[in-house]
Image (cartoon, rainbow, N blue to C red; front, side, top):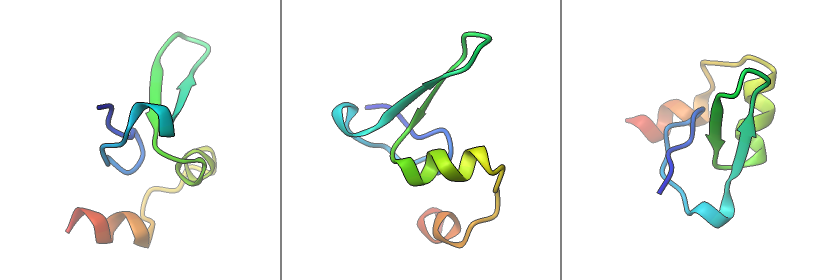
Length: 53
């Protein structure tokens, strides 16, 4: 099971997104919410910090 690059949550393979950068690095994302926040370069989001605690 891959781990989301943004929120560090484990998810099923068939439910997530795989984001491949131009330099060849692969980033697994659990949802489009994580993808959008990653593109906006947000790091301290309240819904991420609640899951880590």
